[in-house]
Amino acid sequence: MSINEHREFVNILNDFPEGFKAVLALEQACHSGPLDPFIFELVKMRASQLNGCAYCLDMHYKDARAMGETEERLCMLSAWRESKLYTPAERAALALTEEVTLIANHHVSTEVEAEARRQFDAKTYANLVFTIAVINVWNRLAITGHTPAGEYKSTRTKLK
Image: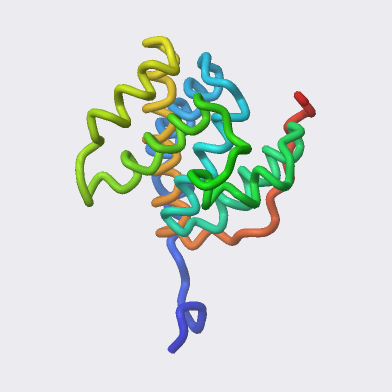
């Protein structure tokens, strides 16, 4: 039997609204923090690529484009190390995103942490770490909850 045949999925967000509200509150706190909104979306997309979360990739791609992010930068995101399209702050945030997202492989290296701390003040660095943590939570909820991708409509406005 295929994954979608004769099987009902539990709507985990509806069936545990207290959990959903708690994660949503963390998301809102991260979104209103000092982290640059374009770095916010790049981090969300990169973690979602690593985790294979189609729903979150759809959402954050559409939000980034609506804000004015370029197609080229989003297309190159999975190979950011080989591209000159990203600023030093973006590169530090992406490196930290990869290490936190893949933390089961090894802990965050002192070099990656030090570079991120050089690029961001203490509050922005903390905002970045929480943003990486919350997208990893959302990825796991969306994947485990079988949230369908492709239907998200962005409400973001152009910033660039």
